[in-house]
Image 1 (tube, rainbow, N blue to C red):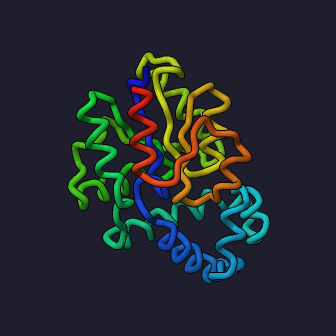
Image 2: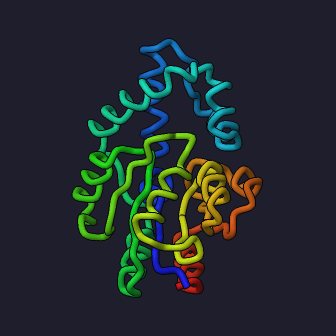
Length: 211
């Protein structure tokens, strides 16, 4: 029986894909990387993060610098963002069932808390955990499990990227992959998630069978 849910943030709880493309293109102009065009989006959704980085010609060593710059731009534009329709209901239902919900994201804690405050979700989550390594979410998940004193079978992760699935697979943590975020359904399926859902309504039904 699941007692803890870790939600990813960008793409899962918040519809931020258009903003992140906009911010990336601003940085691309500054650093002279390849820009993302509208016609590139479908292909990029089908690629892993490392494949996207290679295709866009972004030097791996510059990624940490870009993340810091991107987080600042994100904060400046955060009022543009909205909760994915239907996700507030999922969060409220889990809380009513006594399930502990937290956020684990590569975004900054400051940005996430500001977004939650703007959307009247200040008290919806027990914890906000910022994953320090974009390619190593499993380290953060393992740390959370140790802090909570819980086993993989007592928690579940909800995310929208192949790297979320890969991180959970390393630890034996069940994962629900959602198709409305960054990665395409086909890419998500390639990681063999425990569950794949196409709407917040489907997500709620799935979670209700697990708690």
